[in-house]
Length: 227
Image 1 (cartoon, rainbow, N blue to C red):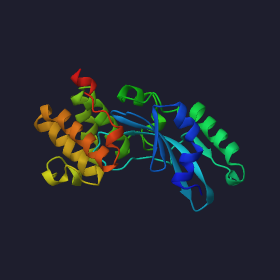
Image 2: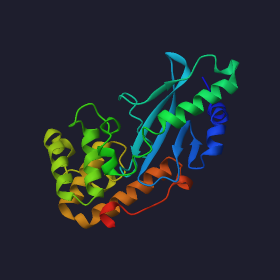
Image 3: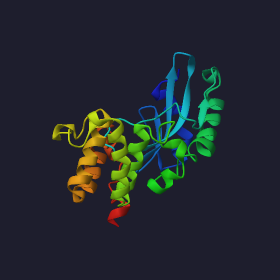
Image 4: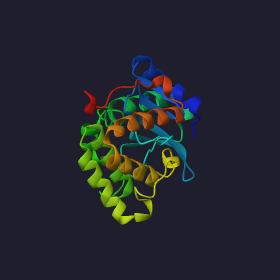
């Protein structure tokens, strides 16, 4: 398994010629990023001793302090060879080529909700009504000012899981590590005071970026609904 330092060394030629790319925490990503963290994560597995690279696009304004790579989805994958240490220059050339021409292009354009909707394989969940997919869509609708659509989407989730209702959620759930409570929190804001929805999304985005320790790579920007 390649360490984070070894991966960065292998990727050095790509990082040198592409200033818009950064590498941190076994993750290669575009920077500065705004509402979406997009890139490639290098994962380890007990079933294979070499790292596997998987493309991802993570919606940052969901209040989650760690990226959701959703590796079980059908996404671009690249398995590093077992013998990469025997010919590191060749391994670097192959890895940089794969990242630059196939892995990164798969997610480069996912910078807002409209682009995210055009890439359903990167939206999470195998079924349109799984909670993770519902949350992604509800947040996205909020980002473009379609609050009624967001409320309808979350209300369906509330009917399926009434224990996580807008009426039951409390203020201390604002940054709850369980997304179901954050979904309920957003639904409460949509019903009680829609003027607070976009400030909440900005707050969640900042909370997420700080939690990932990626603040220096982040560029705070308005949501489409604010332009």
